[in-house]
Image (tube, rainbow, N blue to C red):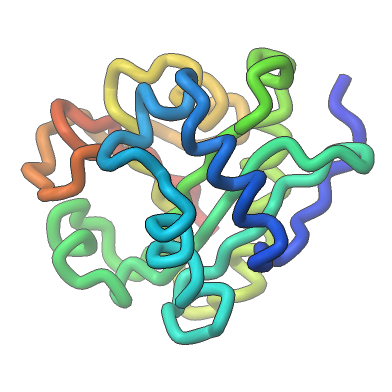
Length: 175
């Protein structure tokens, strides 16, 4: 059974841990792209930490242990991605369990389920939360389904982001 889940705002002091998570083989399989150097982590997450980028990033903390990261954003703040996904008035979420020994224990689905309330609280103008894992990422899909997300469709989104290559599974959670 999963202990209490808390979401701590991501800070620069978390960047070393985040980098190690993004470098882990089980994460790199799905979070593709350039090797996550310290500079790349700063480029990607520094603007959110500073409040310049509208995405909100959090460390997943389970029973006092930092185990992963989750982020959310209004889809409308990412117009190209919003148009590709095609679910109006939505917020997007991305997540990872960075600690390999914590995968497959129900932490992902518990964290995703708990995070939905926080996302709806942050964005009172959204009607749905969207997650878009690769169709082959069965662990992520199971976590979403256990958290109450429903599959909308599977299709190639033709994004420039290497993490979106191939067929994606579009899931939503309605308010």
